[in-house]
Length: 266
Image 1 (cartoon, helix red, strand yellow):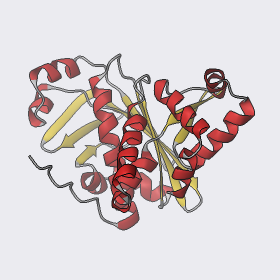
Image 2: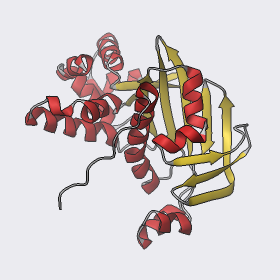
Image 3: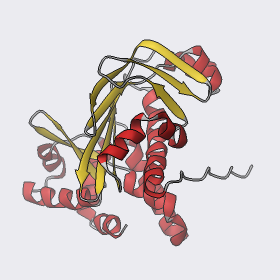
Image 4: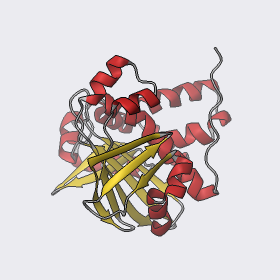
């Protein structure tokens, strides 16, 4: 928590976050150009932001891309928000919204550190006994590349030959194609007719989980991509993934899931 506030205290680092909020997934060279800062200065500021987990990186070939990461602010708002006065609460809420939006990017990237082992985290990502607790969804598959997946969530069952395991390297990398939205899904989750019409025409996306041992923790990076322009599915998963991953982290670290939020007053 201290690292987050330290990282945000510097105006140059806030400018870096603003730049990534406008256009996520930039290289070091692009960030230097946009901000008219030296490569050395930007590298130092990025190191502080990465240490605070406000920025995460992914490699694409020889390039290293930088992304906003909402996880540390989500952790503060989920677990410690009551310790701060109203001014800080509002500031955190504004930052949380900015970190989660990154509207210029057509993919979702999120990194969290979980005090567990790669083996336990892999089990939590694949075992229905775990996924049902922190997600409310289960997957019937043998977790071999190319195998189909039967997705069940709150009474909805998704069976589709194109819903498959893409990569399964135990304890390191797992990826699979995401479900599409059929009429049964829309009815089960109460989508309006216009929402269903838009979602039902979207291409199938893919989610990838990258597990990396990091001291006594595991660094989990989630990459969800393959969305079309103006994707309604992407807008939905930007809200859904932080809650699911926060619940996953809490379950593995405490043995319990987060309590359901109290309904808002009318």
